Image 1 (cartoon, rainbow, N blue to C red):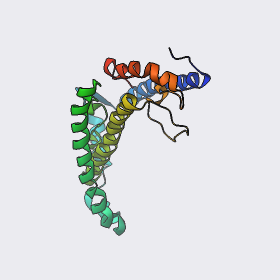
Image 2 (cartoon, one colour):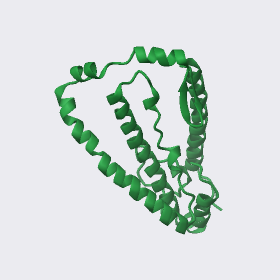
Image 3 (cartoon, rainbow, N blue to C red):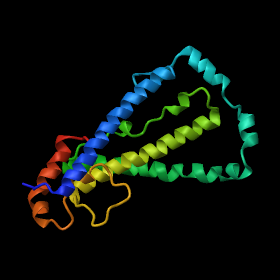
Image 4 (cartoon, rainbow, N blue to C red):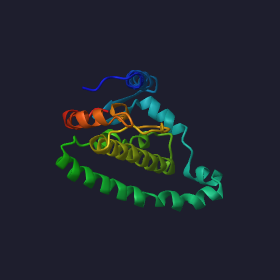
Length: 203
């Protein structure tokens, strides 16, 4: 049985604080829904009629938007949108990987819909180009989050060891990992940590 160190206790406190903050964020988001008069029905955003009409009045027309855009922004658009190709390849390959390998290893699959959220195109104050941009960014960043969780579960299964150097933004499963150099805990608890991946898909 692994003996908790002071370092483990600090990591657990950080993780607990993170969960508390996430709950507080959910509460604040509920307040924002009430403030801006929208609700979520079966995963779809629904605005009140008066709020939607007000948003439409604030929308910048396509002509005004393009006229004010710097030429360099317009010329860079093919580079930005060209990234959809490697992103789509990542989406396809990371899904293929988890559906094959996770089933073999007994790891719970990551739900793609929990990470890739496309909803900002429902905002009536955005014009067509802005909506496309928001769909693109929502997809790209959500895909990276989705991929990161798949890789985090893979790391927990195969190499759940903390690094000797602290990284800038470690994923949420790092607090479960074994200390760098702790061979005894690694050998005695690796299988139980692997079983955790099949028993629960929580972060």
